[in-house]
Image (spheres, helix red, strand yellow):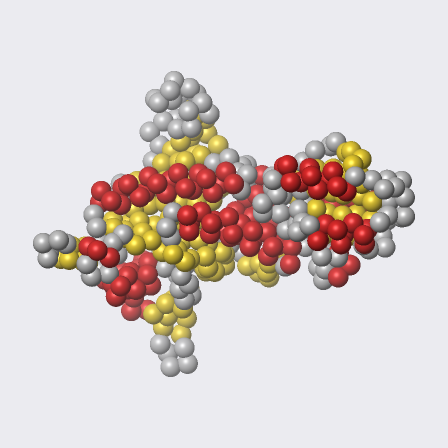
Length: 407
Protein backbone atom coordinates (compact mmCIF):
# COMPACT_ATOMS: atom_id res chain seq x y z
CA UNK A 1 0.00 0.00 0.00
CA UNK A 2 1.17 3.50 -0.77
CA UNK A 3 1.17 5.71 2.30
CA UNK A 4 -0.03 8.66 0.24
CA UNK A 5 -3.43 6.96 -0.20
CA UNK A 6 -3.77 5.72 3.38
CA UNK A 7 -6.70 7.78 4.65
CA UNK A 8 -5.45 7.76 8.24
CA UNK A 9 -2.44 9.69 9.43
CA UNK A 10 -0.06 9.93 12.35
CA UNK A 11 -0.48 12.81 14.80
CA UNK A 12 2.18 15.09 16.22
CA UNK A 13 1.06 14.73 19.83
CA UNK A 14 -0.35 12.06 22.11
CA UNK A 15 -4.05 11.90 23.04
CA UNK A 16 -4.70 13.70 26.31
CA UNK A 17 -7.34 11.24 27.55
CA UNK A 18 -5.25 8.05 27.46
CA UNK A 19 -2.89 6.88 30.19
CA UNK A 20 -1.26 3.63 29.03
CA UNK A 21 1.68 3.99 26.66
CA UNK A 22 0.48 1.32 24.24
CA UNK A 23 -2.90 2.88 23.51
CA UNK A 24 -1.31 6.33 23.29
CA UNK A 25 0.93 5.04 20.51
CA UNK A 26 -1.95 3.22 18.78
CA UNK A 27 -4.08 6.36 18.70
CA UNK A 28 -1.24 8.68 17.72
CA UNK A 29 -0.06 6.36 14.92
CA UNK A 30 -3.59 6.05 13.52
CA UNK A 31 -4.24 2.38 14.30
CA UNK A 32 -7.40 3.04 16.30
CA UNK A 33 -9.76 5.92 17.02
CA UNK A 34 -11.43 6.39 20.40
CA UNK A 35 -15.19 6.84 20.13
CA UNK A 36 -16.04 6.70 23.85
CA UNK A 37 -14.59 5.26 27.04
CA UNK A 38 -13.76 1.64 26.25
CA UNK A 39 -15.00 1.88 22.64
CA UNK A 40 -12.64 2.09 19.64
CA UNK A 41 -12.76 1.99 15.85
CA UNK A 42 -10.09 -0.14 14.21
CA UNK A 43 -8.62 1.80 11.30
CA UNK A 44 -6.76 0.21 8.33
CA UNK A 45 -3.46 -0.37 10.13
CA UNK A 46 -5.17 -1.51 13.32
CA UNK A 47 -7.56 -3.84 11.52
CA UNK A 48 -4.65 -5.47 9.73
CA UNK A 49 -3.02 -6.20 13.08
CA UNK A 50 -6.29 -7.51 14.51
CA UNK A 51 -6.82 -9.82 11.52
CA UNK A 52 -3.25 -11.13 11.75
CA UNK A 53 -3.72 -11.96 15.44
CA UNK A 54 -7.02 -13.66 14.60
CA UNK A 55 -5.33 -15.71 11.89
CA UNK A 56 -2.71 -17.07 14.30
CA UNK A 57 -5.37 -17.95 16.87
CA UNK A 58 -7.62 -19.50 14.22
CA UNK A 59 -4.82 -21.74 12.94
CA UNK A 60 -4.16 -23.09 16.43
CA UNK A 61 -7.86 -23.62 17.22
CA UNK A 62 -8.36 -25.48 13.93
CA UNK A 63 -5.28 -27.60 14.62
CA UNK A 64 -6.73 -28.86 17.90
CA UNK A 65 -10.00 -29.83 16.19
CA UNK A 66 -12.08 -26.71 16.75
CA UNK A 67 -14.88 -25.93 14.30
CA UNK A 68 -15.51 -22.23 13.79
CA UNK A 69 -19.01 -20.83 14.17
CA UNK A 70 -20.48 -17.36 14.64
CA UNK A 71 -23.12 -16.70 17.26
CA UNK A 72 -25.37 -13.62 17.58
CA UNK A 73 -24.64 -10.62 19.73
CA UNK A 74 -28.37 -10.29 20.53
CA UNK A 75 -29.42 -12.86 23.17
CA UNK A 76 -32.99 -13.73 24.24
CA UNK A 77 -33.72 -12.75 27.82
CA UNK A 78 -35.24 -16.19 28.46
CA UNK A 79 -31.89 -17.90 28.01
CA UNK A 80 -30.25 -15.69 30.61
CA UNK A 81 -33.16 -16.25 32.99
CA UNK A 82 -32.73 -20.02 32.66
CA UNK A 83 -29.14 -19.75 33.93
CA UNK A 84 -30.05 -17.16 36.57
CA UNK A 85 -27.62 -14.62 35.13
CA UNK A 86 -30.16 -12.06 33.88
CA UNK A 87 -29.98 -10.40 37.29
CA UNK A 88 -26.63 -11.66 38.60
CA UNK A 89 -24.35 -10.67 35.68
CA UNK A 90 -23.63 -7.07 36.64
CA UNK A 91 -21.92 -6.08 33.37
CA UNK A 92 -24.86 -7.13 31.18
CA UNK A 93 -26.17 -4.62 28.64
CA UNK A 94 -29.96 -4.96 28.35
CA UNK A 95 -32.04 -3.62 25.46
CA UNK A 96 -35.72 -3.52 24.46
CA UNK A 97 -37.27 -3.75 21.03
CA UNK A 98 -40.20 -1.62 19.89
CA UNK A 99 -42.62 -4.08 21.45
CA UNK A 100 -40.92 -3.87 24.82
CA UNK A 101 -39.36 -7.33 24.65
CA UNK A 102 -35.98 -7.45 26.41
CA UNK A 103 -32.73 -8.97 25.22
CA UNK A 104 -29.09 -8.94 26.25
CA UNK A 105 -26.07 -7.86 24.25
CA UNK A 106 -23.67 -10.78 24.50
CA UNK A 107 -20.76 -10.41 26.93
CA UNK A 108 -20.16 -14.18 26.71
CA UNK A 109 -21.97 -16.98 24.88
CA UNK A 110 -22.82 -19.85 27.22
CA UNK A 111 -26.49 -18.88 27.02
CA UNK A 112 -26.40 -19.39 23.25
CA UNK A 113 -24.04 -22.32 22.66
CA UNK A 114 -25.60 -24.72 25.17
CA UNK A 115 -29.08 -24.62 23.57
CA UNK A 116 -27.37 -25.20 20.21
CA UNK A 117 -25.45 -28.21 21.52
CA UNK A 118 -28.64 -29.61 23.04
CA UNK A 119 -30.07 -29.88 19.50
CA UNK A 120 -26.94 -31.47 18.06
CA UNK A 121 -25.93 -34.00 20.75
CA UNK A 122 -28.05 -36.96 21.78
CA UNK A 123 -25.69 -39.92 21.98
CA UNK A 124 -22.24 -40.67 23.39
CA UNK A 125 -21.20 -41.09 19.75
CA UNK A 126 -21.74 -37.35 19.22
CA UNK A 127 -19.07 -36.41 21.76
CA UNK A 128 -16.64 -34.77 22.16
CA UNK A 129 -17.50 -31.55 20.31
CA UNK A 130 -15.17 -28.55 19.94
CA UNK A 131 -16.48 -25.23 18.62
CA UNK A 132 -15.16 -21.68 18.72
CA UNK A 133 -15.83 -18.19 17.47
CA UNK A 134 -14.00 -14.89 17.13
CA UNK A 135 -16.53 -12.16 17.72
CA UNK A 136 -17.39 -8.73 19.03
CA UNK A 137 -18.61 -8.63 22.63
CA UNK A 138 -19.91 -5.90 24.92
CA UNK A 139 -19.78 -5.51 28.68
CA UNK A 140 -20.90 -2.62 30.84
CA UNK A 141 -17.54 -2.34 32.57
CA UNK A 142 -17.50 -0.09 35.61
CA UNK A 143 -13.92 1.00 34.87
CA UNK A 144 -13.26 1.18 31.15
CA UNK A 145 -9.68 2.39 31.11
CA UNK A 146 -6.23 1.47 29.81
CA UNK A 147 -7.44 1.57 26.22
CA UNK A 148 -7.86 -1.87 24.64
CA UNK A 149 -6.85 -3.59 27.86
CA UNK A 150 -10.32 -3.09 29.37
CA UNK A 151 -13.00 -2.13 26.91
CA UNK A 152 -16.77 -2.01 26.89
CA UNK A 153 -16.72 -3.37 23.34
CA UNK A 154 -13.98 -5.81 22.37
CA UNK A 155 -13.01 -8.74 20.17
CA UNK A 156 -12.70 -12.14 21.79
CA UNK A 157 -12.09 -15.75 20.84
CA UNK A 158 -14.17 -18.16 22.88
CA UNK A 159 -13.79 -21.91 22.46
CA UNK A 160 -16.17 -24.43 24.04
CA UNK A 161 -15.53 -28.14 24.47
CA UNK A 162 -18.20 -30.72 25.30
CA UNK A 163 -17.43 -34.12 26.80
CA UNK A 164 -18.92 -37.34 28.06
CA UNK A 165 -17.41 -37.08 31.52
CA UNK A 166 -15.03 -35.20 33.77
CA UNK A 167 -12.07 -37.40 32.83
CA UNK A 168 -12.36 -36.55 29.14
CA UNK A 169 -12.76 -32.85 30.01
CA UNK A 170 -9.67 -32.95 32.23
CA UNK A 171 -7.55 -34.40 29.44
CA UNK A 172 -8.64 -31.81 26.90
CA UNK A 173 -8.21 -29.00 29.42
CA UNK A 174 -4.52 -29.89 29.83
CA UNK A 175 -4.18 -30.08 26.05
CA UNK A 176 -5.61 -26.59 25.65
CA UNK A 177 -3.20 -25.25 28.24
CA UNK A 178 -0.34 -26.27 25.94
CA UNK A 179 -2.13 -24.93 22.87
CA UNK A 180 -2.50 -21.54 24.53
CA UNK A 181 1.19 -21.42 25.36
CA UNK A 182 1.88 -22.07 21.67
CA UNK A 183 -0.43 -19.23 20.61
CA UNK A 184 1.25 -16.67 22.84
CA UNK A 185 4.70 -17.84 21.86
CA UNK A 186 3.83 -17.29 18.19
CA UNK A 187 2.62 -13.81 19.09
CA UNK A 188 5.96 -13.00 20.71
CA UNK A 189 4.62 -12.70 24.26
CA UNK A 190 6.03 -14.17 27.45
CA UNK A 191 3.16 -15.40 29.60
CA UNK A 192 2.75 -16.81 33.06
CA UNK A 193 0.28 -19.65 33.51
CA UNK A 194 -1.45 -18.45 36.66
CA UNK A 195 -3.64 -20.62 38.85
CA UNK A 196 -6.80 -18.76 39.79
CA UNK A 197 -10.19 -19.35 41.32
CA UNK A 198 -12.72 -21.29 39.26
CA UNK A 199 -15.58 -19.27 40.73
CA UNK A 200 -18.91 -21.10 40.78
CA UNK A 201 -17.83 -23.43 37.96
CA UNK A 202 -14.92 -25.43 39.35
CA UNK A 203 -12.20 -25.50 42.01
CA UNK A 204 -9.71 -23.59 39.89
CA UNK A 205 -9.02 -22.05 36.50
CA UNK A 206 -5.88 -20.86 34.72
CA UNK A 207 -5.12 -17.38 33.50
CA UNK A 208 -2.44 -16.44 30.99
CA UNK A 209 -0.83 -13.26 32.25
CA UNK A 210 1.76 -10.90 30.76
CA UNK A 211 3.77 -8.90 33.28
CA UNK A 212 3.30 -5.16 32.80
CA UNK A 213 3.14 -2.12 35.11
CA UNK A 214 -0.22 -1.12 33.62
CA UNK A 215 -1.82 -4.50 34.33
CA UNK A 216 -4.83 -4.57 36.62
CA UNK A 217 -4.09 -8.03 38.05
CA UNK A 218 -1.52 -8.86 40.70
CA UNK A 219 0.24 -12.21 40.47
CA UNK A 220 2.74 -13.97 42.69
CA UNK A 221 5.24 -15.94 40.65
CA UNK A 222 8.58 -17.71 40.72
CA UNK A 223 11.01 -16.51 38.07
CA UNK A 224 12.92 -19.78 38.30
CA UNK A 225 10.30 -22.46 37.68
CA UNK A 226 7.28 -20.50 36.44
CA UNK A 227 4.97 -21.28 39.36
CA UNK A 228 2.32 -18.54 39.56
CA UNK A 229 -0.90 -17.79 41.40
CA UNK A 230 -3.37 -14.95 41.28
CA UNK A 231 -3.14 -12.94 44.50
CA UNK A 232 -6.86 -13.57 45.21
CA UNK A 233 -6.17 -17.28 45.92
CA UNK A 234 -2.41 -17.22 46.54
CA UNK A 235 -0.95 -19.50 49.20
CA UNK A 236 2.42 -17.74 49.02
CA UNK A 237 3.63 -14.20 49.63
CA UNK A 238 6.06 -11.83 47.98
CA UNK A 239 9.61 -12.65 49.09
CA UNK A 240 8.85 -16.18 50.28
CA UNK A 241 10.55 -19.31 49.03
CA UNK A 242 8.83 -21.13 46.15
CA UNK A 243 7.40 -24.44 47.34
CA UNK A 244 8.00 -25.98 43.92
CA UNK A 245 11.71 -25.29 43.36
CA UNK A 246 13.11 -23.20 46.22
CA UNK A 247 13.34 -20.04 44.14
CA UNK A 248 12.16 -16.61 45.23
CA UNK A 249 8.50 -15.58 44.96
CA UNK A 250 7.91 -12.16 43.41
CA UNK A 251 4.81 -10.01 43.02
CA UNK A 252 4.00 -8.22 39.80
CA UNK A 253 1.23 -6.39 37.97
CA UNK A 254 0.02 -8.21 34.89
CA UNK A 255 -2.39 -8.18 31.96
CA UNK A 256 -4.67 -11.18 31.52
CA UNK A 257 -4.68 -12.11 27.83
CA UNK A 258 -6.45 -15.45 28.10
CA UNK A 259 -8.09 -17.87 30.48
CA UNK A 260 -9.33 -21.44 30.55
CA UNK A 261 -11.78 -22.97 32.99
CA UNK A 262 -13.98 -25.98 33.44
CA UNK A 263 -17.70 -25.31 33.27
CA UNK A 264 -18.39 -28.93 34.22
CA UNK A 265 -22.22 -29.21 34.23
CA UNK A 266 -22.97 -25.62 35.31
CA UNK A 267 -24.84 -24.82 32.07
CA UNK A 268 -25.70 -28.34 30.93
CA UNK A 269 -27.96 -28.75 33.92
CA UNK A 270 -30.26 -25.71 33.48
CA UNK A 271 -30.51 -26.29 29.73
CA UNK A 272 -30.81 -30.10 30.13
CA UNK A 273 -27.93 -30.79 27.73
CA UNK A 274 -27.58 -34.56 28.02
CA UNK A 275 -26.69 -37.67 26.03
CA UNK A 276 -27.39 -41.39 26.20
CA UNK A 277 -24.43 -43.54 27.19
CA UNK A 278 -23.74 -47.10 25.96
CA UNK A 279 -26.28 -48.51 28.41
CA UNK A 280 -28.97 -46.04 27.38
CA UNK A 281 -28.70 -43.91 30.51
CA UNK A 282 -29.13 -40.14 30.28
CA UNK A 283 -26.05 -38.24 31.42
CA UNK A 284 -25.25 -34.57 31.57
CA UNK A 285 -22.62 -33.23 29.19
CA UNK A 286 -19.43 -31.83 30.74
CA UNK A 287 -17.98 -28.66 29.23
CA UNK A 288 -14.96 -26.38 29.27
CA UNK A 289 -14.45 -22.81 28.10
CA UNK A 290 -11.26 -21.25 26.72
CA UNK A 291 -11.05 -17.52 26.03
CA UNK A 292 -8.52 -15.18 24.44
CA UNK A 293 -8.95 -11.40 24.32
CA UNK A 294 -8.07 -10.63 20.68
CA UNK A 295 -8.25 -6.84 20.85
CA UNK A 296 -6.71 -6.95 24.33
CA UNK A 297 -3.79 -8.85 22.82
CA UNK A 298 -3.29 -6.02 20.36
CA UNK A 299 -3.22 -3.54 23.23
CA UNK A 300 -0.87 -5.77 25.23
CA UNK A 301 1.60 -6.12 22.37
CA UNK A 302 1.54 -2.34 21.89
CA UNK A 303 2.20 -1.90 25.60
CA UNK A 304 5.01 -4.37 26.23
CA UNK A 305 6.67 -4.37 22.79
CA UNK A 306 7.27 -0.66 22.36
CA UNK A 307 9.94 1.88 23.24
CA UNK A 308 10.14 5.64 23.66
CA UNK A 309 9.85 6.17 19.89
CA UNK A 310 6.86 4.01 19.17
CA UNK A 311 5.50 0.56 18.49
CA UNK A 312 7.59 -2.53 17.70
CA UNK A 313 5.40 -5.14 16.00
CA UNK A 314 6.53 -8.77 15.69
CA UNK A 315 6.52 -9.94 12.08
CA UNK A 316 3.46 -12.20 12.27
CA UNK A 317 1.03 -9.59 13.58
CA UNK A 318 2.53 -6.45 12.00
CA UNK A 319 0.26 -4.60 9.54
CA UNK A 320 3.08 -4.80 6.99
CA UNK A 321 6.42 -6.57 7.00
CA UNK A 322 8.38 -3.79 5.31
CA UNK A 323 8.15 0.01 5.53
CA UNK A 324 9.74 1.39 2.35
CA UNK A 325 10.86 5.03 2.58
CA UNK A 326 11.74 6.91 -0.58
CA UNK A 327 14.03 9.93 -0.14
CA UNK A 328 15.38 12.28 -2.84
CA UNK A 329 16.71 10.35 -5.81
CA UNK A 330 15.39 7.00 -4.62
CA UNK A 331 13.97 4.14 -6.69
CA UNK A 332 10.83 3.69 -4.60
CA UNK A 333 8.36 2.74 -7.33
CA UNK A 334 10.64 0.04 -8.77
CA UNK A 335 11.43 -1.49 -5.40
CA UNK A 336 7.80 -1.30 -4.28
CA UNK A 337 6.60 -3.22 -7.33
CA UNK A 338 9.34 -5.82 -6.91
CA UNK A 339 8.50 -6.44 -3.25
CA UNK A 340 4.82 -6.74 -4.05
CA UNK A 341 5.51 -9.25 -6.83
CA UNK A 342 7.50 -11.27 -4.30
CA UNK A 343 4.47 -11.46 -2.00
CA UNK A 344 5.99 -9.22 0.66
CA UNK A 345 3.59 -7.02 2.63
CA UNK A 346 4.93 -3.49 2.16
CA UNK A 347 3.85 0.03 3.15
CA UNK A 348 5.49 2.47 0.72
CA UNK A 349 6.04 6.01 2.05
CA UNK A 350 5.91 7.88 -1.25
CA UNK A 351 4.83 11.18 0.32
CA UNK A 352 6.62 14.46 -0.39
CA UNK A 353 7.62 15.24 3.19
CA UNK A 354 10.98 15.57 4.93
CA UNK A 355 13.24 12.62 5.67
CA UNK A 356 13.02 13.40 9.38
CA UNK A 357 9.23 13.14 9.34
CA UNK A 358 9.39 9.83 7.50
CA UNK A 359 11.90 8.34 9.92
CA UNK A 360 9.92 9.50 12.97
CA UNK A 361 6.65 8.07 11.63
CA UNK A 362 8.33 4.80 10.69
CA UNK A 363 9.51 4.39 14.29
CA UNK A 364 6.07 5.36 15.60
CA UNK A 365 4.19 2.87 13.39
CA UNK A 366 6.67 0.14 14.23
CA UNK A 367 6.72 -2.06 11.11
CA UNK A 368 9.45 -4.73 11.56
CA UNK A 369 11.75 -3.67 8.68
CA UNK A 370 12.56 -0.15 7.52
CA UNK A 371 14.02 0.10 4.02
CA UNK A 372 15.36 3.40 2.66
CA UNK A 373 16.10 4.15 -0.97
CA UNK A 374 17.75 7.44 -1.91
CA UNK A 375 20.39 9.00 -4.14
CA UNK A 376 22.89 8.26 -1.37
CA UNK A 377 22.09 4.50 -1.25
CA UNK A 378 22.29 4.22 -5.06
CA UNK A 379 21.51 0.73 -6.28
CA UNK A 380 21.47 -0.62 -2.73
CA UNK A 381 19.04 -0.26 0.16
CA UNK A 382 19.58 0.97 3.70
CA UNK A 383 17.95 -1.68 5.86
CA UNK A 384 17.15 -1.53 9.57
CA UNK A 385 15.08 -3.76 11.84
CA UNK A 386 12.74 -1.74 14.08
CA UNK A 387 13.98 -3.69 17.09
CA UNK A 388 17.65 -2.94 16.34
CA UNK A 389 19.87 0.14 16.08
CA UNK A 390 22.01 -1.43 13.36
CA UNK A 391 21.66 -0.30 9.73
CA UNK A 392 23.26 -1.92 6.71
CA UNK A 393 23.48 -1.46 2.95
CA UNK A 394 22.32 -4.47 0.94
CA UNK A 395 21.04 -5.24 -2.53
CA UNK A 396 17.34 -5.81 -3.04
CA UNK A 397 17.99 -9.46 -3.80
CA UNK A 398 19.94 -9.97 -0.60
CA UNK A 399 17.28 -8.17 1.41
CA UNK A 400 14.63 -10.55 0.11
CA UNK A 401 16.90 -13.46 0.97
CA UNK A 402 17.30 -12.02 4.47
CA UNK A 403 13.52 -11.86 4.92
CA UNK A 404 13.17 -15.45 3.73
CA UNK A 405 15.83 -16.61 6.18
CA UNK A 406 14.26 -14.74 9.11
CA UNK A 407 10.87 -16.24 8.38
